Image (cartoon, rainbow, N blue to C red):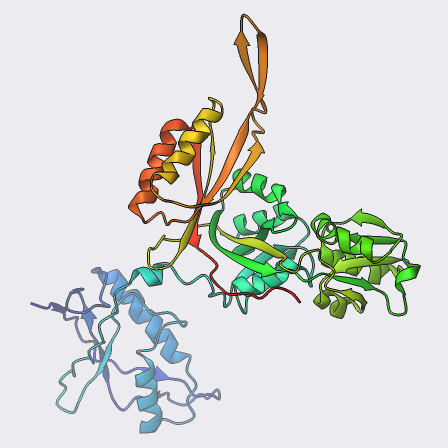
Length: 430
């Protein structure tokens, strides 16, 4: 049975001040209201709290809100609008207590409050939003505006607020310090291979991979307006971009030196800022538009199918699902030579789990392992960390069993993330 606590003599009139300061009598509402405190939280969904202090503080908030309203006259229309406004949220937020103010009719009988529609229960879709949803997100990337990482951030999270960072590690720290919500960083390229720096940072920081995006890369040779190719003496760009365009730059017959800088768009900005008429940059067409450069050669990458894979990083992991293709990334270390690596890979092969990538990096804490042998001497072996990507979700039993078996053979195992695969189609560059 619902319990309604009656408080003594609550049929008080609420006073509303006029918009202009006056010293005559205040206007009283024509319709009295009664504050009903609901203590039954089951019958009244919004009614939580059972102390008289909670009820008194809530009435004080409502009374101060009524007094602050501006009214030009005390007619019934203004009175009704003021009383209707009492049920609104306080300071734009829904109050935790049920503060329904029930108007009284002529017979002084309270009218029952309107029934609220039942809340929709949460589903797994609510807890694990689609990775393409990026509205109102702050996304960190390495580089300056016009970089390929900025384009990847826009593809991963449309309508996001892109935050440029001068280094990869700064992008990691921006997410850890709540300056950014996500980070989008490259991990491998179809021509240049892996970006080893980011693999090392994945192990150093505690961020989680929550998605991936593949971006076709279209390189251009950029220079200041009026500069011709035969005037060039050097070409600057990111090391990956220089390696991806090495053969094409040679075929252009340019007698230039190649110098590496932090990022592609930064190279274009550097030329425009310093007015370098003997230097060209390898960057995107968008960088040419942003920094006022001309495109001397378009599509200079050695392979038209030039694609860079980016990963999206967040502070918290997403809930793995089985209703769409997922990929899982792990890193592990072992201490017993290559035979253990074979056992680890067999754990995936026996369960028909496809590996999409395996990458080895030196173990920074233990780069060399010494093996004593009385007959031969002391042998030195390099210690490695292994990064593996496989096509399965951690919600699948086969993936859980595979990692349980892998853990038996390894001295260290960490799941970097289980995330949806990028299934968006793309066309090679012309």
